[in-house]
Amino acid sequence: MIEVEGMMSEENPVLITFDGKFLELFFRSGMKFKHEKYPIKWIKKLEIKDEGKSRTLNYTMNFLAPVGFFPFESGGENLQELVDAVNRATGAF
Image (cartoon, rainbow, N blue to C red; front, top):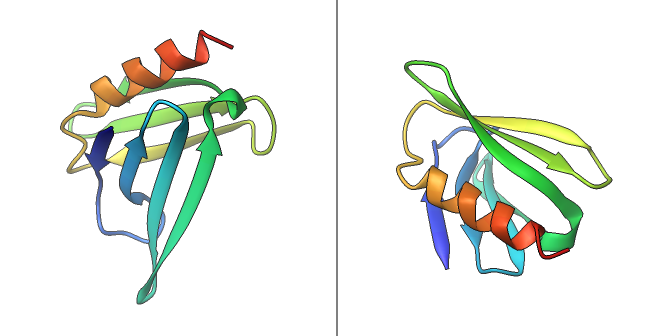
C-alpha cells in the first residue's frame, strides 16, 4: 500500500492511499473527515505538474468529474511513487 500525506486544508486531501485496486482520498471537512474511494478502473491517469514551490497532482477519470487537481505545497514526498503505481495499474484495463 502506498500512502501520501497532504496538507491540512479543506480543499486538498489530507491523505491519499492506493492498494493496487482502489485510490482513496481523505479530506478534512470542519471537524470531521470525508472519505472517497475510487476503483482503479474509474481512473484514466494521474500526473504531477511541478510549479516550483509546489506540485500539483492532476487526475483524469473515465467518467464522473473527468478532470481535477490537488496542489501540494507541503507533504507529498512519495507522490511520484503513487502516480507511477496508479498509472501502471490503469494500464491493465
